[in-house]
Length: 334
Image (cartoon, rainbow, N blue to C red):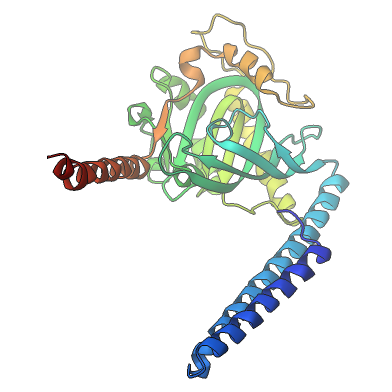
């Protein structure tokens, strides 16, 4: 969120007050018999606007203070901190499917004993649909030892992917052992069902339920992504829990994936380069080759509500055109 300076705030407030005063004078002058309550409606509107502006300034100031504290805490732990980053080439589904994706309050701990990346993100989804959806969420990205198939675990609640309107082709759904289907829905590329079950064993699933319940989880290339509610990692005290949970999940997940090898791929497996300074789209495109193309990405589509809205919007436009032709154009041409 951009900071608002006092220099730009004061003129805005003065302009609101001046316009409100003119509106009140106009209302009383033009309608001298109007009741006082009606005449003071513009004044009430101005009070609301001033309250909104003041509230926005307070929120911005609090965010700036919180960001400074988070940056200091991150640096003291040996993490890198970046306030804002645009166009980053992370391969997660919310990064590659969105438009104008911006990462905020980025914590980069890849140079530490427990490497991870975490922060906030925002973007626009459904750019090719009639109804676009803005999304704000938090994410954690954990590097893996090997490149793995693209596997998605959708939480049963209203997770980030559902809010973004992203749905995975139901033909790729895979039932989990035990009662884990009541918490997550697992999707993997067709033909990779056995691979997915070898990675997501019951003990790993139980750990994910304990640490990521309510979140969406994705394995893609040599990364694991966890998507959750916005603002989850914007306060310094959140780092303690973030490091502890990442260490538990990373330790277990690395044991599950360290020996993975996609026999369908013609390229040899390579160790993940978790210490790289940046992650560009070209680098990730080169890494996809370690898993066969068929298994590198799940097939996604617009969610059912979004498709229904698109169909309804198209039907409304078509109906309006037909009605106009029938009622206006055709009668006049006869």
